[in-house]
Length: 304
Image (cartoon, rainbow, N blue to C red; front, side, top):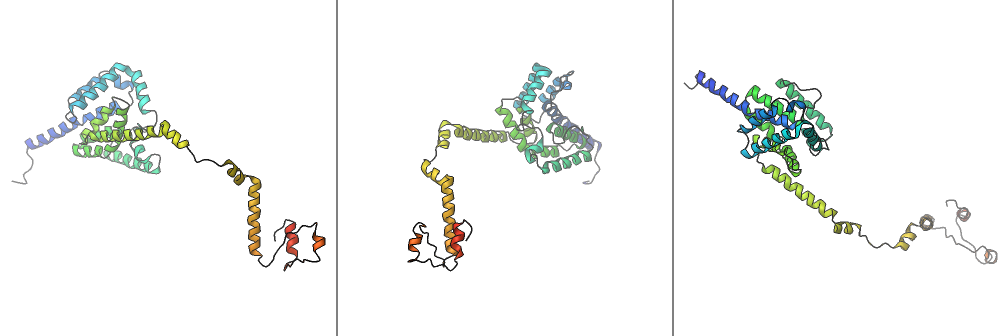
Protein backbone atom coordinates (compact mmCIF):
# COMPACT_ATOMS: atom_id res chain seq x y z
CA UNK A 1 0.00 0.00 0.00
CA UNK A 2 1.22 3.44 -0.85
CA UNK A 3 0.17 4.93 2.52
CA UNK A 4 1.63 2.15 4.63
CA UNK A 5 3.14 3.15 7.94
CA UNK A 6 6.93 3.17 8.12
CA UNK A 7 8.42 -0.17 8.98
CA UNK A 8 11.03 -0.70 11.67
CA UNK A 9 13.60 -1.18 8.93
CA UNK A 10 12.76 2.16 7.28
CA UNK A 11 12.83 3.93 10.63
CA UNK A 12 16.26 2.50 11.37
CA UNK A 13 17.53 3.67 7.98
CA UNK A 14 16.28 7.20 8.64
CA UNK A 15 17.89 7.24 12.07
CA UNK A 16 21.13 5.96 10.56
CA UNK A 17 21.05 8.74 7.94
CA UNK A 18 20.50 11.39 10.62
CA UNK A 19 23.36 9.99 12.68
CA UNK A 20 25.57 9.88 9.59
CA UNK A 21 24.69 13.48 8.71
CA UNK A 22 25.30 14.68 12.24
CA UNK A 23 28.63 12.83 12.30
CA UNK A 24 29.65 14.50 9.05
CA UNK A 25 28.54 17.89 10.36
CA UNK A 26 30.84 17.48 13.34
CA UNK A 27 33.36 18.87 10.92
CA UNK A 28 31.71 22.27 11.50
CA UNK A 29 32.43 21.97 15.21
CA UNK A 30 36.06 21.15 14.43
CA UNK A 31 36.37 24.13 12.10
CA UNK A 32 34.77 26.30 14.75
CA UNK A 33 37.33 25.20 17.35
CA UNK A 34 40.27 25.73 15.01
CA UNK A 35 39.04 29.13 13.81
CA UNK A 36 38.43 30.41 17.31
CA UNK A 37 41.15 31.90 19.49
CA UNK A 38 43.59 29.07 20.39
CA UNK A 39 42.75 28.91 24.08
CA UNK A 40 44.24 26.57 26.64
CA UNK A 41 41.37 24.11 26.14
CA UNK A 42 42.37 23.53 22.53
CA UNK A 43 45.76 22.24 23.64
CA UNK A 44 44.48 20.27 26.61
CA UNK A 45 44.37 16.48 26.55
CA UNK A 46 44.03 15.06 23.03
CA UNK A 47 41.67 17.71 21.58
CA UNK A 48 43.83 18.44 18.55
CA UNK A 49 44.30 14.72 17.82
CA UNK A 50 40.53 14.16 17.92
CA UNK A 51 40.04 17.10 15.56
CA UNK A 52 42.59 15.68 13.18
CA UNK A 53 40.88 12.28 13.10
CA UNK A 54 37.47 13.84 12.38
CA UNK A 55 38.96 15.87 9.53
CA UNK A 56 40.67 12.84 7.96
CA UNK A 57 37.42 10.87 8.01
CA UNK A 58 35.18 13.62 6.71
CA UNK A 59 33.37 13.00 3.44
CA UNK A 60 32.33 16.61 3.04
CA UNK A 61 35.66 17.99 1.87
CA UNK A 62 38.27 16.96 -0.67
CA UNK A 63 41.43 15.03 0.23
CA UNK A 64 43.53 18.08 -0.61
CA UNK A 65 41.62 20.30 1.81
CA UNK A 66 41.66 17.57 4.45
CA UNK A 67 45.44 17.51 4.12
CA UNK A 68 45.68 21.30 4.47
CA UNK A 69 43.62 21.31 7.67
CA UNK A 70 45.77 18.48 9.03
CA UNK A 71 48.81 20.65 8.35
CA UNK A 72 47.20 23.49 10.29
CA UNK A 73 46.59 21.19 13.24
CA UNK A 74 50.18 19.94 13.13
CA UNK A 75 51.35 23.56 13.01
CA UNK A 76 49.32 24.40 16.12
CA UNK A 77 50.73 21.38 17.90
CA UNK A 78 54.30 22.32 17.03
CA UNK A 79 53.90 25.99 17.94
CA UNK A 80 52.35 25.41 21.31
CA UNK A 81 49.78 27.52 23.07
CA UNK A 82 51.61 30.83 23.46
CA UNK A 83 53.13 31.04 19.97
CA UNK A 84 49.88 29.92 18.40
CA UNK A 85 48.08 32.71 20.21
CA UNK A 86 50.65 35.27 19.08
CA UNK A 87 50.27 34.15 15.47
CA UNK A 88 46.48 34.29 15.75
CA UNK A 89 46.60 37.83 17.12
CA UNK A 90 48.81 38.98 14.26
CA UNK A 91 46.26 37.68 11.76
CA UNK A 92 42.79 38.28 13.14
CA UNK A 93 43.26 41.02 15.70
CA UNK A 94 45.01 43.61 13.49
CA UNK A 95 42.28 45.45 11.64
CA UNK A 96 39.03 44.61 9.89
CA UNK A 97 40.27 42.92 6.73
CA UNK A 98 40.26 39.53 8.48
CA UNK A 99 37.43 40.23 10.89
CA UNK A 100 35.60 37.06 11.94
CA UNK A 101 32.30 38.90 12.48
CA UNK A 102 29.99 38.26 9.55
CA UNK A 103 27.90 41.40 9.60
CA UNK A 104 30.92 43.69 9.84
CA UNK A 105 31.73 42.69 6.25
CA UNK A 106 28.12 43.32 5.20
CA UNK A 107 26.95 46.33 7.20
CA UNK A 108 30.11 47.81 8.67
CA UNK A 109 29.24 50.00 11.65
CA UNK A 110 25.78 50.98 10.38
CA UNK A 111 22.57 50.48 12.33
CA UNK A 112 21.64 47.64 9.98
CA UNK A 113 24.30 45.51 11.64
CA UNK A 114 22.58 45.83 15.01
CA UNK A 115 19.23 44.74 13.60
CA UNK A 116 20.84 41.81 11.78
CA UNK A 117 22.39 40.62 15.04
CA UNK A 118 19.04 40.92 16.83
CA UNK A 119 17.46 38.75 14.13
CA UNK A 120 20.24 36.16 14.37
CA UNK A 121 19.98 36.09 18.15
CA UNK A 122 16.25 35.43 17.82
CA UNK A 123 17.08 32.52 15.51
CA UNK A 124 19.42 31.09 18.15
CA UNK A 125 16.84 31.42 20.89
CA UNK A 126 14.11 29.86 18.77
CA UNK A 127 16.35 26.83 18.19
CA UNK A 128 17.19 26.60 21.89
CA UNK A 129 20.85 27.42 21.32
CA UNK A 130 22.34 29.40 24.19
CA UNK A 131 25.43 31.53 23.66
CA UNK A 132 27.87 33.33 25.89
CA UNK A 133 26.61 36.84 26.57
CA UNK A 134 30.15 38.16 26.03
CA UNK A 135 30.21 37.09 22.37
CA UNK A 136 28.36 38.64 19.45
CA UNK A 137 26.05 36.26 17.57
CA UNK A 138 27.64 36.95 14.16
CA UNK A 139 31.06 35.65 15.26
CA UNK A 140 31.83 33.00 12.63
CA UNK A 141 33.06 30.26 15.05
CA UNK A 142 29.86 30.83 17.06
CA UNK A 143 27.71 30.60 13.95
CA UNK A 144 29.41 27.35 12.90
CA UNK A 145 28.81 25.88 16.32
CA UNK A 146 25.14 26.77 15.98
CA UNK A 147 24.94 25.07 12.58
CA UNK A 148 26.59 21.96 13.99
CA UNK A 149 23.99 22.02 16.76
CA UNK A 150 21.21 22.37 14.21
CA UNK A 151 22.52 19.42 12.21
CA UNK A 152 22.21 17.20 15.29
CA UNK A 153 18.85 18.64 16.37
CA UNK A 154 17.10 18.51 13.01
CA UNK A 155 19.17 16.24 10.81
CA UNK A 156 18.56 18.73 8.00
CA UNK A 157 21.97 18.72 6.34
CA UNK A 158 20.69 20.53 3.26
CA UNK A 159 19.49 23.52 5.29
CA UNK A 160 22.84 23.72 7.04
CA UNK A 161 24.62 23.73 3.70
CA UNK A 162 22.32 26.47 2.42
CA UNK A 163 22.96 28.59 5.51
CA UNK A 164 26.70 28.40 4.86
CA UNK A 165 26.18 29.13 1.18
CA UNK A 166 24.39 32.34 2.13
CA UNK A 167 27.66 33.73 3.49
CA UNK A 168 29.95 32.10 0.93
CA UNK A 169 30.99 35.46 -0.55
CA UNK A 170 32.38 36.51 2.84
CA UNK A 171 34.11 33.16 3.32
CA UNK A 172 35.72 33.47 -0.12
CA UNK A 173 37.04 36.97 0.64
CA UNK A 174 38.54 35.85 3.95
CA UNK A 175 40.03 32.74 2.35
CA UNK A 176 41.66 34.81 -0.38
CA UNK A 177 43.13 37.27 2.09
CA UNK A 178 44.56 34.43 4.18
CA UNK A 179 46.09 32.81 1.11
CA UNK A 180 47.62 36.18 0.25
CA UNK A 181 49.22 36.12 3.70
CA UNK A 182 50.31 32.49 3.14
CA UNK A 183 48.35 31.41 6.20
CA UNK A 184 47.30 27.82 6.84
CA UNK A 185 44.02 29.12 8.27
CA UNK A 186 42.83 29.53 4.66
CA UNK A 187 42.14 25.79 4.63
CA UNK A 188 39.22 26.28 7.05
CA UNK A 189 37.46 28.62 4.63
CA UNK A 190 38.08 26.29 1.72
CA UNK A 191 36.43 23.53 3.74
CA UNK A 192 33.38 25.65 4.48
CA UNK A 193 32.92 26.47 0.81
CA UNK A 194 33.05 22.77 -0.05
CA UNK A 195 30.54 21.92 2.68
CA UNK A 196 28.23 24.53 1.15
CA UNK A 197 28.71 23.01 -2.29
CA UNK A 198 30.46 26.13 -3.57
CA UNK A 199 33.48 25.98 -5.91
CA UNK A 200 36.91 26.99 -4.64
CA UNK A 201 37.16 29.16 -7.73
CA UNK A 202 35.32 31.78 -5.67
CA UNK A 203 38.55 32.25 -3.74
CA UNK A 204 40.53 32.36 -7.00
CA UNK A 205 38.23 35.10 -8.25
CA UNK A 206 38.80 37.13 -5.10
CA UNK A 207 42.55 36.66 -5.42
CA UNK A 208 42.39 37.90 -9.00
CA UNK A 209 40.48 41.00 -7.87
CA UNK A 210 43.05 41.60 -5.15
CA UNK A 211 45.88 41.31 -7.66
CA UNK A 212 44.21 43.80 -9.97
CA UNK A 213 43.75 46.25 -7.12
CA UNK A 214 47.36 45.80 -6.09
CA UNK A 215 48.53 46.37 -9.67
CA UNK A 216 46.55 49.59 -9.85
CA UNK A 217 48.00 50.72 -6.53
CA UNK A 218 51.54 49.94 -7.65
CA UNK A 219 50.96 51.85 -10.86
CA UNK A 220 49.70 54.84 -8.92
CA UNK A 221 52.71 54.67 -6.61
CA UNK A 222 55.25 54.38 -9.43
CA UNK A 223 57.77 57.15 -9.99
CA UNK A 224 56.23 58.06 -13.33
CA UNK A 225 52.80 58.39 -11.75
CA UNK A 226 54.17 60.52 -8.94
CA UNK A 227 55.96 62.78 -11.44
CA UNK A 228 52.82 63.04 -13.54
CA UNK A 229 50.73 63.89 -10.53
CA UNK A 230 53.06 66.69 -9.55
CA UNK A 231 53.24 68.12 -13.07
CA UNK A 232 51.21 71.33 -13.25
CA UNK A 233 50.64 74.07 -15.72
CA UNK A 234 53.18 76.87 -15.70
CA UNK A 235 52.26 79.46 -13.14
CA UNK A 236 52.34 83.13 -14.12
CA UNK A 237 53.57 84.46 -10.80
CA UNK A 238 53.22 88.06 -11.95
CA UNK A 239 49.70 87.46 -13.10
CA UNK A 240 48.89 85.53 -9.95
CA UNK A 241 50.38 88.32 -7.86
CA UNK A 242 48.34 90.91 -9.68
CA UNK A 243 45.22 88.83 -9.39
CA UNK A 244 45.61 88.01 -5.71
CA UNK A 245 47.29 91.20 -4.53
CA UNK A 246 45.03 92.88 -1.93
CA UNK A 247 45.49 96.33 -3.47
CA UNK A 248 44.48 95.07 -6.90
CA UNK A 249 41.52 93.26 -5.44
CA UNK A 250 40.47 96.48 -3.79
CA UNK A 251 40.79 98.33 -7.09
CA UNK A 252 38.72 95.69 -8.83
CA UNK A 253 36.06 95.97 -6.14
CA UNK A 254 36.00 99.78 -6.45
CA UNK A 255 35.74 99.59 -10.23
CA UNK A 256 32.90 97.10 -9.98
CA UNK A 257 31.10 99.27 -7.44
CA UNK A 258 31.49 102.36 -9.58
CA UNK A 259 30.17 100.51 -12.61
CA UNK A 260 27.13 99.44 -10.64
CA UNK A 261 26.57 102.96 -9.42
CA UNK A 262 26.86 104.27 -12.94
CA UNK A 263 24.15 101.87 -14.09
CA UNK A 264 21.86 102.94 -11.25
CA UNK A 265 22.40 106.65 -11.95
CA UNK A 266 22.30 106.89 -15.70
CA UNK A 267 20.90 110.38 -15.60
CA UNK A 268 23.60 111.69 -13.25
CA UNK A 269 26.79 112.43 -15.30
CA UNK A 270 29.50 112.87 -12.70
CA UNK A 271 32.77 114.41 -13.92
CA UNK A 272 35.98 114.03 -11.97
CA UNK A 273 37.69 117.40 -11.94
CA UNK A 274 41.04 118.85 -10.93
CA UNK A 275 40.19 120.97 -7.92
CA UNK A 276 43.32 122.99 -8.44
CA UNK A 277 41.77 124.39 -11.59
CA UNK A 278 38.15 124.31 -10.51
CA UNK A 279 38.08 127.95 -9.63
CA UNK A 280 39.40 128.87 -13.05
CA UNK A 281 36.96 126.75 -15.01
CA UNK A 282 33.86 126.96 -12.85
CA UNK A 283 32.71 130.07 -14.67
CA UNK A 284 32.91 128.45 -18.08
CA UNK A 285 31.78 124.90 -17.28
CA UNK A 286 28.96 123.91 -14.98
CA UNK A 287 28.32 120.37 -13.74
CA UNK A 288 24.78 119.36 -14.68
CA UNK A 289 23.40 117.37 -11.76
CA UNK A 290 19.84 116.26 -11.16
CA UNK A 291 20.93 115.30 -7.63
CA UNK A 292 23.30 118.05 -6.41
CA UNK A 293 24.24 116.20 -3.24
CA UNK A 294 25.37 113.02 -5.08
CA UNK A 295 28.87 114.26 -5.84
CA UNK A 296 29.58 115.47 -2.31
CA UNK A 297 28.40 112.19 -0.84
CA UNK A 298 30.56 110.27 -3.26
CA UNK A 299 33.65 112.26 -2.43
CA UNK A 300 33.11 111.65 1.28
CA UNK A 301 33.14 107.93 0.65
CA UNK A 302 29.47 107.36 1.40
CA UNK A 303 27.03 105.47 -0.87
CA UNK A 304 25.39 107.33 -3.65
